[in-house]
Image: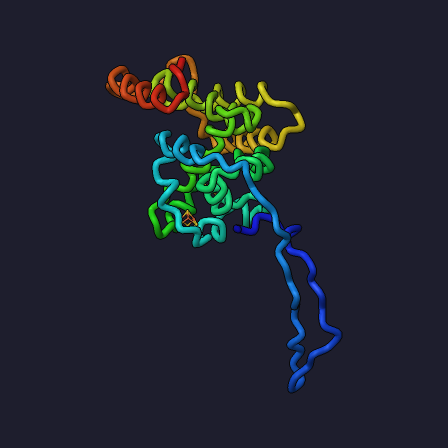
Length: 232
Ligand code: SF4
Ligand code: SF4
């Protein structure tokens, strides 16, 4: 039985002292894992993740943990609960009850793609994490999150002409979020930086990607297949 929680470890008793040649070798002994029976595995969960464009590589993972050890959120930002290896494990085993505990954590992936660069098994970790989040919401295991609302706003924005309207995107998103929201704070800081650097590409005459009409059709068909529905 896999260990999911530290609370399952029971009966840890420290020996009073066991020093050999000046080295304390007492350690922990008499450690037991509390027995429990899990009946809530959803075997079809991983297949649903796999059926999404971004989730195709979910079953390649062999649980080495390289993604988590280099993940910006997990390490640099100290969000220890954010553990892509573990999310993938829970998705693979269909342990949705455990996965649900992270409904307000999973969406926080910032898509830096460091994990994708490092994964030795070619798992598109960033896409897989988003696909897991997507399936959770489809199954009612997670509410709509700032992350999913951001994805939707971003998609709707870029699908208009194939070129991002950064200012329009930022304003629309920031307006739609609660003031205290973490992402809003992050987005506000990002918006300020964009404005400060003069990198705003927006305005009445919005640029358009060459041949966008044809490309949009292809992109729309992929999004439809992934369950996003049609974009504006
Ligand atoms: S680095 Fe790749 S194989 Fe290793 S745990 Fe992460 S996703 Fe799985
Ligand atoms: S893309 Fe997401 S999961 Fe991967 S390293 Fe960056 S924050 Fe972590």
